[in-house]
Image (cartoon, rainbow, N blue to C red; front, side, top):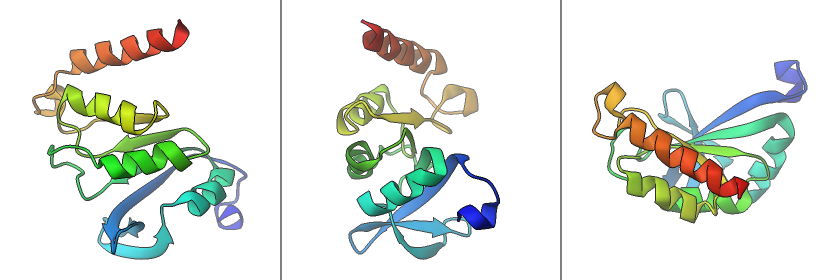
Length: 140
């Protein structure tokens, strides 16, 4: 990867994945093609050498607003050696708390279509207030 990209460190590496045969597998081509690379401890350790942060899309729940992939968040919280942001399925404020708990407060989150500013029901202002509260807790 290092030689093909031509620079030493990516800022953020997007790892979109879907569950197949019980394992999270990186997908490509608009999330339609399964690769032979799994999102697991060895892969995260290896890829961390090429990025400052991972952005991980839980494709199985992405855009559906039906809840998060808690198992994936747990895996990321346990094994990612660098900062990681999870995307997929967030629809309520409770989902933010579930990410915090499952990810051991080590997994950040990005929210898309569920936000009211994008036509969803989740108030942007509530998400901002929740995030500020989390930041304040970390400073105490």
